[in-house]
Amino acid sequence: MIQFTNVSMVYPRGNKALQNIDLNIDKGEMVYISGHSGAGKSTLLRLINLVDRHTRGQIIVKGQNLERIRNKRVAKFRRNIGFIFQDHKLLNDRTIFDNVALPLVIAGNTHQDIKRRVQASLDKVGLLSKINNYPMELSSGECQRIGFARAVVHRPTILLADEPTGNLDPALSWEMMKLFEQFNQVGVTVMIASHELDMIKHMHKRIIVLNKGRTVDI
Amino acid sequence: MVIGIALAFPTGFIVFLDNIKVVSSNLDNTIELNLFLKMDVNEIKAEALADKLSNHEDIKKIILIRRDEALSEYKKLSGFDNVLDSLDENPFPNLILIKPKFKNNENSQIADLVEELKIMPEIENIQYDNKWINRLTKIIEIIKLVVLILSALLVASVLLIIGNTIRLSIYNHRDEIEITKLFGGSDSFIQRPFLYSGFWYGIFGGLIAWFLVLISISILGDPVKKLSYLYDANFKLVGLGLTDTLTLLAVGIFLGILGSWIAVKRHLRSIEPG
Image 1 (cartoon, rainbow over the protein chains, first blue to last red):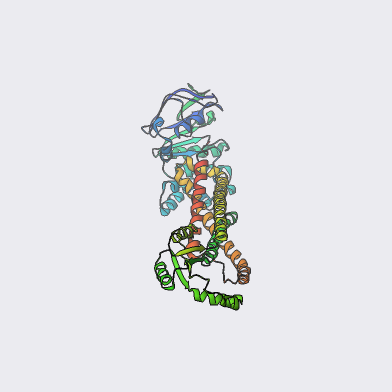
Image 2: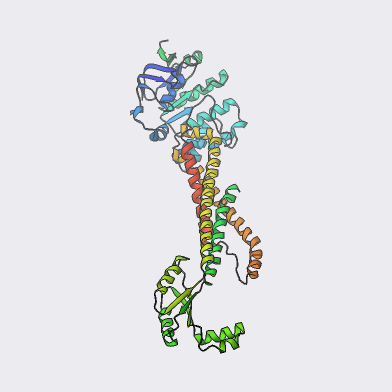
């Protein structure tokens, strides 16, 4: 599903974010990317979502060579991917419904379908009662679950999460990880970047550890 | 409001030009050519010439003043009856008064007509006072150019105002644009609401401009009318017709969409998910 072959990423100012990365993630697999701050976890996810472009090597996602995807085609490519951010990135001037509906509005779904899917997605994360609230009225943990609902509402085949539990207490973090597992069980490929190695060891999934832009064995 | 004012100026200038055109076309009617015929051209020949000239495409009206009529009129006006009666012969030639036709307000047409008439054997002399008409025409041409330049500058300023407003709006929605791009929103999807904003800025700007011009005309209408009475004329300010109003709105919409399209094309690319 996701294949990195000898991938390097050097930022314009010369910062080597990733060096000679080789990895293969199967369809429906759930993988954790771990490492210290600046190890290259976020960069790895950003390359998959085409937020950044790798400078060397080859990345294949769902059979598509990312190097060959032109800028104009990036938007369409991203519609297959769900993304969860550490800082939620919710729109504070929109209701929870509007925030979660965003990927469906972009995809051009009908109003009826959007309503149905948003309700189902919010129900899944246990926040259907907050559908008409604004993000400012919700706690950090609730906002992260809303971010999760938005990332999965359009049923992506790949779900990427960058430090999704970074701002949450251990109980909420565990709850969040369980949501990822549930979603993975229906066949979605999940990649989670997290520096909380102790917690993710308990999830019994493959862990890829990065150190200074390189993969290391644990 | 700023867009409305910026659009109101060129619109007002155009209305001003339309009114000047009306004034100048009224002045055109006052131009008259006096054709003094040779003394040996008798009345029959003069009538024949008048008939011939009346069919000319550049001549609107012809009046033949026979030499006897000219003499009696001069007697009436001057009061020199006795002196004129003592003359052996009527000193006045037959006279043809011509009102030329104006096509496209071209003053050069008269000069062409005069050149054509000058070579006719029956005509001794042609008199017409075209200096002031020439001056007025030149002044109007300069005013037209000034209006054109000012209108172009103001239209450019409308584009800049709309472009800047949209640019600020784009930067205010920076987070939203970034998130939309992350979830697969294409540039055309993201730019759509900004183009709609440009459309509304344009249409409301056009309506405000129309309203401002309407108010200006209603304020100026009465004083201009009174002024025209002082010049024995019955001039009335011409406002914006239906076609002009629709054109103004269409121009407003066009500028609104164009301004926002330019701003969106320039600034949207610079916002990428970071």
